[in-house]
Length: 249
Image 1 (cartoon, rainbow, N blue to C red):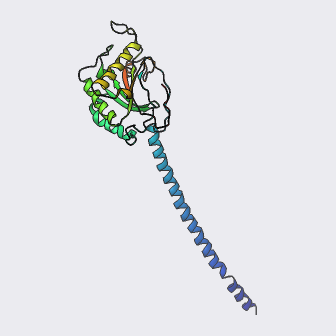
Image 2: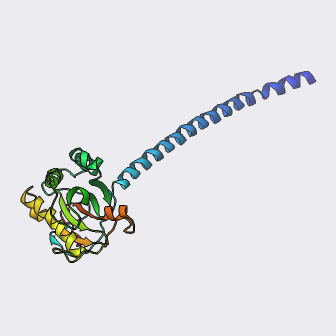
Image 3: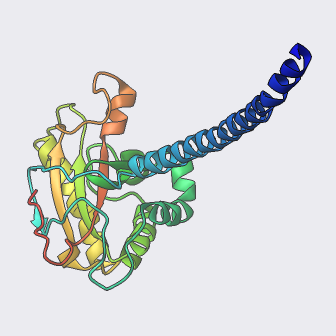
């Protein structure tokens, strides 16, 4: 009688084996699902981080800063590359950089031109060594042709440009210029007149400002820093979108 009871008890407990198998399989399923979900989250984070870093490095989310200068002419625009009034698609920063690099390949390699993005906008820096003699505002031979190539690219995008003159902090007092203010402004005006008169850049899309020595990008205590500071910057800006007021400089 006792043997029969033991057999009956063993038969009644067989469901535990099936239940254990079921729980094990269910656990394995959740482990696999979690692994897939975790991998997807990691991939999304990686892609999202890469996209954000790319746009951030191009200044796509930068707010335009406000500036004041020694001399300003023309109409200032916002410091954001947006949509041109010509109805063209927005001028992409990456595409604009690519076209300028194609047009100015040799000058970029020689260090005469630098292309970069700042909170002020997309900047094409014309270094003194490739465009002016020291203390002079007359373009060097061949410099005009270089600037015209830049102008062709910018005009194709319907963008506005602010021409900024900069200098180092070394005192200047010659027959033509009494200060770095005058020199930086005169160089900016030289470039502006070339863009308007010879490249036929729309006068309504261009302005100038002379900063003298007060917006350095290098250390004026070193020869290399002073060389970097002697420049004319073409700051690419775009007309404000419909219904959006432009910020004043």
